[in-house]
Amino acid sequence: MSEHQNGDGAPPGGPQDPQPAKLAEAEQPQEAQAEQPQEAQAEQPQEAQAEQPPLTREELERKAAQLSAMLEESMSRARETQERLKDTHERLLRVAAEFDNFKKRATKEREDAQKFGIERLLKDFLPVADNLERALDHAEEHDLRQVIEGVKLVQKLLENTLTKHGVTGFSALGQPFDPNLHEALMQQESDAPAGTVVSEMSRGYKLNERLVRPAAVVVARPRSGGDTPQAAPGGSAPPGDVK
Image (cartoon, rainbow, N blue to C red; front, top):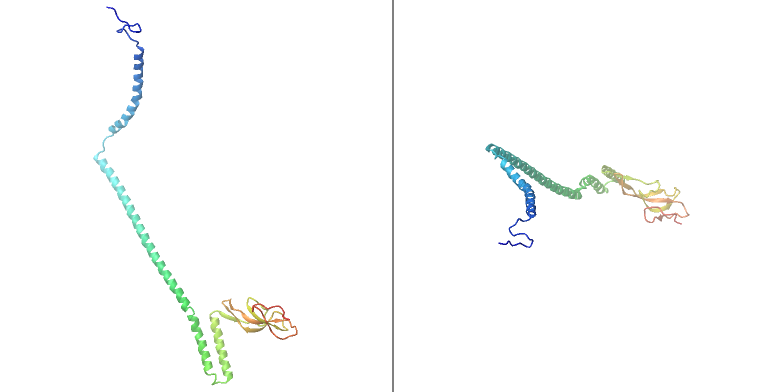
């Protein structure tokens, strides 16, 4: 029988080209080598886990005791913190209550001071009023000289009472006019130097060196041919010469 040839001229049952088979065999080891490290890496933790021996009962009990001690310490600290917070809260409540009571007391004391602040001053002035009343009641029964002496005693008692409370009077008569201490009511022609206080309508008073009332005064000005006093405009400073 004749043998049929394929398109290449080789018989169908003849030997084939070995190059494709060699290439396939060369690629298989490379793919196997690439897959082998991944499989080794995946197997290493499993092997390491498998190599760790199981914990003994004593080790488990020791670990449980450690965890229990840590938990107890944490709970103890939490209780201490809670106690400190409670103590601080109660202390703040007490402080707030004391501050509220302090504000109420301060308000009451301020109101009492406004209502009764002059009580001590009033008690010191009552004897002055009593002596003045007695002097007036007996004025008709005594001569004028005795009445004057009694009024002088009342005046002295009044001055002593004012001094006791820090109130002192001062006189401006004969002194240069001072707008900080004197209130000029008018000017009067006088031989005294211009600007000198020649008459005093009322004394000035200070309370602990602070001016309470200026002295009401008449201020001298040079003579211009007339003796009629001229009123001082504004009442606080002497005006210029009035012609």
